[in-house]
Image (cartoon, rainbow, N blue to C red):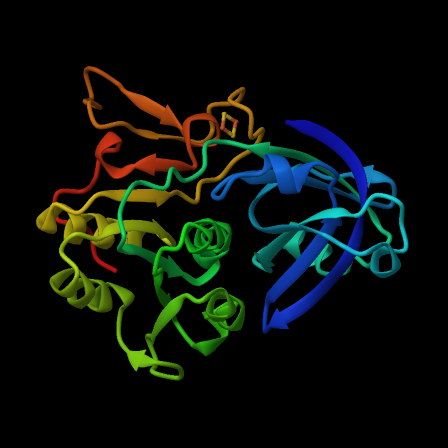
Length: 277
Ligand code: FES
C-alpha cells in the first residue's frame, strides 16, 4: 500500500453519468489484485476533500509518447456521479493533482474451476474486469452476466468481449439484451453448468438474490461488497458487516475495507429470504 501524490491522465464520460479516470500510479500493474480498491482524494481550491473508495477497473503501462510523463504505469477507475464529491471529480482534467491510497483490501481468489461465471450489476462490473483478465490468461472460458436498469448501466462490454469473455446482458427496461433481472440468467446458467464457480459484485439486493441462488445450487460464491468507507484502512469501523456467527448477544462483524471488499459468501450473514431485487 502506498500514498501517492499523482496526476490524472484522462477523465471522460463513457455513458450518461459514468466516468472513466486514469491516474499515473507507478507499481500498480504489479501490485494491484482483482477486486482491490483505492481511496482517492481530490482538491478543490487547494482544500483537500475526504477520500472516497473506488474499485480498480484496470492497470497498465502507457508508451512514453502517450503519457508525456516519465512514470508511465497507471490505474484506471470507473465511477458514477451520485453526489457532490463525484460531481466535482467529473470536472477534473488531465494534469490535475489527486492523492491515491492503495491498493487496498482483499481481492478475489480465483478457485480451480473451468466454469467461472461472473455476475455484475451496474458499477459492480468494474472490479470484475481484472478478474476476467486473470481468468482468461489462465485459459478459462469466462461467462459474464451483466445487469442494469438500462443500457447505460452496461459498462465495458466491448473490452470484456475483446478478452474472449462470453457476455450475457439483461436490463430492467429491455433497452439492451433481454428484459429482466440478471439473476434470472444466472439461474439458467447454473442449470446448464452445475460445476460453476460464481464471482459477483453489484447492489445489495442483487447480491442477496445471487447468494440465495448459489446456496440453493451449492455453488461456491465470492462477492465484492459495496460499502460506505471513510478511512479505507480499518480505523473507523464505519464499513462493518455482520459475519456468519453474528447474533444480537454475540456480535461478529467483518471490516469491509480490511477483510474485504471480497468475501467468500459463506463467511457473511445473509437475509433468510434472499431479499427482493
Ligand atoms: Fe474505516 Fe473500513 S472504512 S474501517
